[in-house]
Image 1: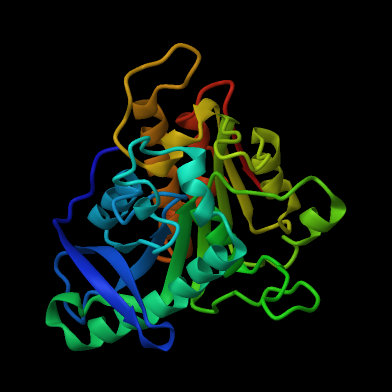
Image 2: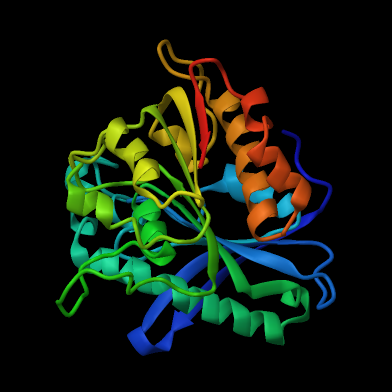
Length: 309
């Protein structure tokens, strides 16, 4: 799918969360024109373990060129600082310190802090006046998908203890896309945790989207997130022979035997995810009809799957 018609300005910002004495790096993509009269829904993207605000570029650049303001968040403590400068580079051992409940909680709390900060900037900077932070799309890859699930309303154990509940849901989040979503296991309790996700939710995964950091994730469990979501709000894009890395939205890799072509995967994902945002955040009836009809089916291969319930 071709880029959209709009030019896009890119701003690298450092957002401050004074309550936690925490700085959140953000790459903000803003379509032009960006005036108070041209309201642009805000979409957030949360990177995977060891990533940065450069993550999700293939998705964010495309969404922005079609009229969405996109903020790529970087989560200190579970970002690229885990491995940069280490002789061995990216490794499970290097990434392990970022795989903790404390880092997960920090990520979840980064999201409302970032929305607040971006809303304040939109109210004070003319070049950002178009950003509408009252109706937000939340998205992320891998660890970022877990972050997305929490903000979308998954029931989770409370940080202070007690019964699981959708305590992390932010009411400004109106729709969500999880690239490589996660389910702890296939138990009834794990499946039930998704029953409280009541907003439109798109899962994007594939048959080779398995475990990359030793957590026990499988392609089947990632796909099972879709089945556990309440009927009427769930959609699944499942691509045969697509692996974990292709869904982070980075530069396409050369063709590899036994794997789906990165460029083709990105072409399909860009088209489907854009239509999802247009339908849910933009209230676009044509995009909704395309999703509900045979639109996605015209893009995918015979071994791929598009499910909408």
